[in-house]
Image: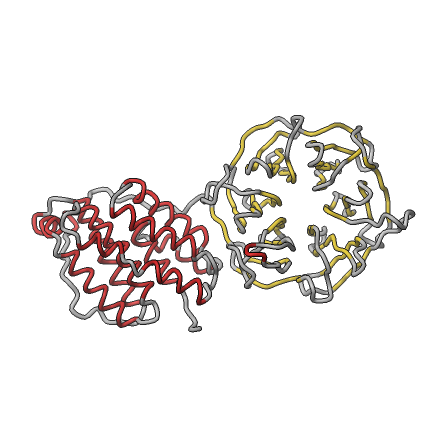
Length: 490
């Protein structure tokens, strides 16, 4: 299989459908992971607009075809099978058909040219000379459209001229980027005074994301927890499960820089250090605390540095040998102690990070105050109060550092799976897993605002789990089924 990069192809798509101001995103894209996930979401959104506006027409079909192919290639490095499937469908060249059909309106033929360029550049991605020849052919077809010729000669259609200029500039830039000469390029002599007087200034989206489904470096399989260290770097834990096509996923904690670029894998299941990570968090001194289990399935807590060196291993004492702890969630309190939720005994442990001793243990199975039927998450606010999410009873109970029950958080029947405390704003963020939302509350549990609806678009959400706070006050969301980390201000 030849080595391929789709970077220039996505840049072409961005230029054609989103904006010609690549300089506004170039630095971010170059530092981002090679999926360009947030960038693709913008391209998909704009192509979807073309599809919706041209519903039940040849242009609509062409836009649908290219959009479906963009959705398919969400992998960092599409394998040969995926690449050939996309290539097969693009060989229909529906965009080229729209461009060449003289019965179709000029504006639609111009849009068809954009799609035709993406089709040709992908079909012949491995044949740069062929791409250059096809681009010259397509641009000659565009120049030969009566409405385009009239707009150029008469300078009477600024909207069409602006689109034609975008196509010409993007096509020339792409041909040069693949190491080809322009050759006998058609003449598009478009004067600045013939273009629209006001140019829309492009602003990068307030929402961005990184990651996509897969098991290569930088890809993700069902991310369920995200943490952000003092340098603004992202640490992401993936679930160990049976994924798409009955594929058994690997489980890792991966490290990404502040712009979402993959740096390295910190821990991986099956390499002798971790056996079944259920959760993780960062300690006060910046090390990685993992809720794990040993080879016998007994729950334990381990602490590692960023080089994967084990610093501490804690296997709590148990009095009932029939019930071994299985830690489903961990957090650190203001004193640096470990708060660990045990899904076997349905109790909460408070453990010392110094020697691993159990300082306190509270809770049991039941429905009354201070009791649990399930534990999905434990968290701790700046005052030391402990919050325990119970998805079976749809409630979050609050305890003091001694394990005494205080009260419940938020409205009854809440589906919040994870809580994050922002001391700067005095607000609490919660992931509403079932309703595909992240909700914001006051410290007393009053609902303030929310983000998300079920979906895959950039502004949508699909089973949010872990949350983390960025240094600039944004929220990072681990979206389990979207296989991405989304960053935004809510």
